[in-house]
Image 1: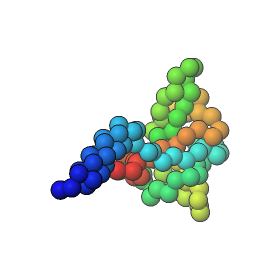
Image 2: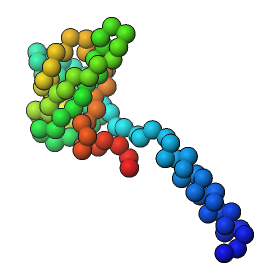
Image 3: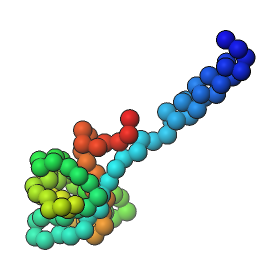
Image 4: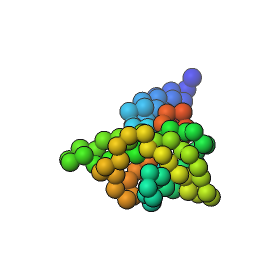
Length: 105
């Protein structure tokens, strides 16, 4: 191997090591509406029955509320929460549970 190629491969190895330290990119949507117990979110495309996590404020802490996709209309998902919804705010982040668009690998 030439010196130039060796330096190039070393630089690539260094970049790869630095990239491994970066946090995973995680896609999320936003909560846009709450009507009764059904919540509406945009920004994600998930199948019926998929599990989502909605961020909820509990004082200074952010908690997670598990919910299930029970319907959709165009780009909107309809979610049914499985837990207490008190503290969920308009615009709250909605994440897919692992296995559905978890992040870039």
